[in-house]
Length: 78
Image (tube, rainbow, N blue to C red; front, side):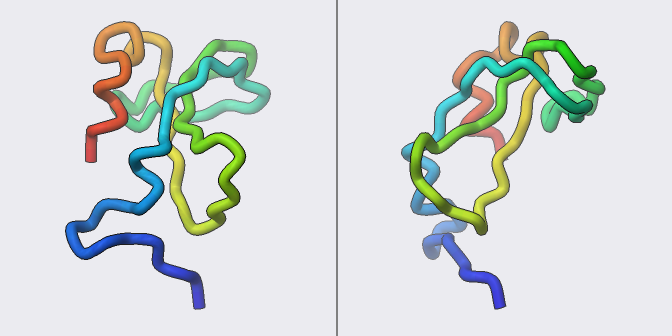
């Protein structure tokens, strides 16, 4: 059974540690905000929590266009 890493308000205890990091795609992805395809070789912005090993956390990926439009505000989207 997977470990649940959420508090009572629905927020993960790791939400405060998340940040967006520019990364070059090695495989295709889909932007979590606009559903646009992120092709191999394009820069995208995945959520990261640094060196914390938390296998139960779903980290989202955002395209360059959404990052340029909203920036770090993307982290607060549910």
